Image (tube, rainbow, N blue to C red; front, top):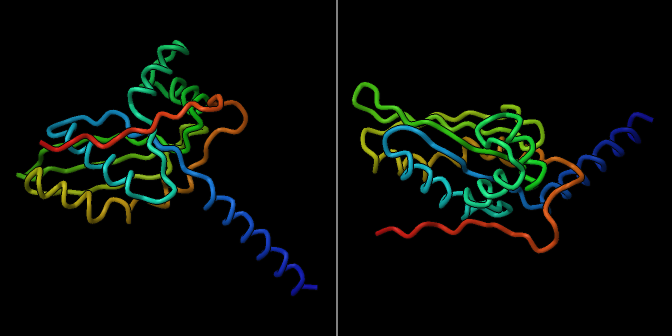
Length: 172
């Protein structure tokens, strides 16, 4: 009897894991604040675009959908409405601060369905280039579980054919 229950639980877990692995995780990398915020945001978008199973929803699409819905994308209520409309699994934002001669980055991951905090990652570097290297080398390892297991709202969402993936900005 116990063996049958264990087999059933294993089968359910494997089925759930397979269905999660097949579905793309829709993520938006929204506003970052502080020194080098635009560069940091671009580095994070570039990193996430290289990850299998991640679809980046552009900041422009989030902003235009917010305008269409008449919601504030900076408020929790607005982000819940946008998550529902755009079927976002995760919403990333963050801040860069300069302290003691170092740039300190905090990246926060919110769940797309309820806008609840699912992860926070901190990285630092003495220069913007070193912080970029930290993002490239460590952010995915430290944040992937929060991103991959954040949940998208069920039910309503994008009409067929509405994409909105963001392309990486070119480096000059």
